[in-house]
Length: 528
Image (tube, rainbow, N blue to C red; front, side):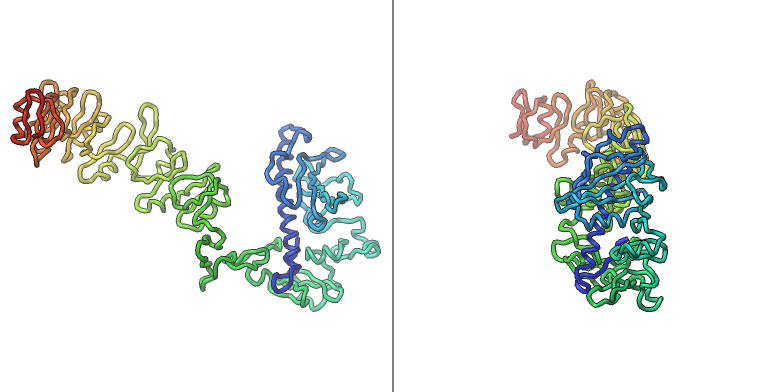
């Protein structure tokens, strides 16, 4: 593994250069591993190696190496290589050092233009660890730390050819020793044994020095200093894991340079900077079009995983559902703290107290709300408020549901298509209702007459009467409806206010009920 040989600001740029080399190599190995896995999977289902194409892959050109469009078979049939062109020599050498596992070997070749081509060699069976790689003149491959050489296990041959022979019988270069911190020879350690365990390697007076664990070698003053600028720890891969508020390859930056740390170790961001590390100019996340979106918005938005994760540490955490960044269950509940919420099939968060039936959701989502249930109408499912929850929503008047599960107040003035059972739910309410022959449920105080209601339905309302074949408000109820001005009925027995500005077709007897407010012209009742 790569060791950071210096710390920016105190140990010069050496550590940063080495760390960036490892960062680039890590990125290339990660991209190559994805392609190698795709090759292995395609081969497993019967495709041939020459039929596999990487041309459509993202990140084919990383900026420090360009991947070939195809894997290339090697002689013998058990191995293939993935070439990366346009690479600098140092990064390629780092790839060689980091080879191991399914990446069996890395070959570096000068392209004659100041760059090299790296051939990353894999076995078709990625789990295999044995087998001779074509073109491997040493008869062995990388062991994951150092490149194996034909002089391994031969101290004299190793040293005669300019290498260093180490205590585990591996032959390596001084550069490999200093950068990887691996296979260091006990007889080259200066100082006492307790100074020679763990940590990074450097060189003092021609000898290799290893610092204690969690320390780095400062090449400038030849001393061991705290690793990761003193603001982080090294993981098993010898990468810096920074403390809260610190970022950078060696944890050298505080709050991304856009804030300060408070006593609790949390970033306090400068104006117009947001996030736990003050690394975003958006107080939320950005969608695929670059728009800044609040974490607490109910809808799902197309976005990248990286952007979506910016809401992880807010009150409204979100997650990727397909290509959409949507509120998690916890985030949805936080959006509606008094009722909780559920998601529809468009990953929009809906309040559990939402009065309408929701057709585009699953039973699992609907069940997140104890006050809702799945109902079916004409073969279509709806997540609706329960009857009890609907009544509770309109606690003063009571409520009822239509056929699609939408909850209405018993005092709603419109005609609503419902079942007889649903309409009768308002029978004991302060505002009872009746139903016409078409299934429309009306408030008993409905001003219009209902020509298609039966007498039995009309009799459910003490303030209505049958006038011919129409269920209409009584004269007293019509006056009560417009208590300030009084009321009268037109020729269709609909109730109007005496102050209504329209000319209404009705009888003179009805018009005269308004006294001096209106007069009858022989056909219509007009406002004076």
